Amino acid sequence: MQLIPKASLAFKREPGSYKTTFGNNVITSLTPLLADKKNKLTVADLPVPVAQLKVLNDALAVAVSDKLNGGRIASAALKAAVIAWNEAFTQTANFISNGAAGDTSLILAAGFLPTKAESQAVPKPCDVPTFF
Image (spheres, rainbow, N blue to C red):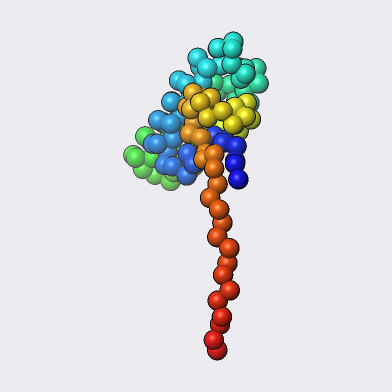
């Protein structure tokens, strides 16, 4: 069975410090990709503008730094920043997945990691006699 590769959403499980590095990579990769007229992805279609992704990424970086210096307020601010960041980058990943239509090179060019294109066969359960 062949699956269509999509942009992986695994970044959502990563810590905030990883997210900011990942976010910078996506922002840096998206900027020239969206400017390329030969590309099927356009800036107008992007669900979250690159400038807004940058603002959210910078806000998360500040929240991560503030959390290191402690306090409940810093923890709450970090949690809110992570939620906003996850939402924006998830929307962007889904947009890239739809626009790429299985083209892993386009997913990679946008700064995301593609999911696997092949699935593994699911083993069939075997009949094991039960003894009571």
